[in-house]
Amino acid sequence: MSFEDWRRIDVDQYDPENVYVEDELPDTRPNTSLQDIQSLTQTLRSSIQRMDIVNALKTAIENAPYGASEEVKDAFLHSVYEVFVSVKLSDINNFIGQFDIDSIDAIVKFVYVLMSKEWALKQSSTLIVWLDRIVETVGDGPIVRYLSDPYKL
Image (cartoon, rainbow, N blue to C red; front, side, top):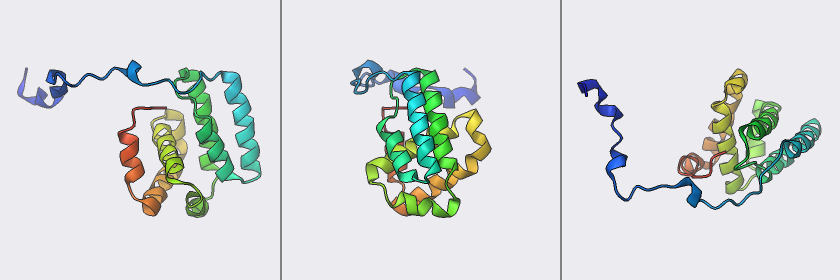
């Protein structure tokens, strides 16, 4: 091993107590189909047209497809992305104030997952503004909880 590779060593592999098996996490959600997401997309779009953003995000939070296939998750994230980019930047603070802390944690999770998607980079500045306003309003607790959450979308 060369001198430059010392940062790539995974020291956690030598810890005998570091045993994380993903199957140990309980499966709390039923498997979501693409048809379910398509009907959810219609619901979200109708909420967007009525400018009922709070209801749209609450619906998305309640119906997040944890444990579903990548195709289903991608369709869901496209719908959530439409909700985020439909909001005027000046109205974001008003919407954030209407959510409880658990909902804000889920919104942070959506924002981070969307920022990792190639197709969402067109409006990444909007996603950054959402994240900035959340941190401005409630602090960085939701980010810490997202980073330590074993349930990934």
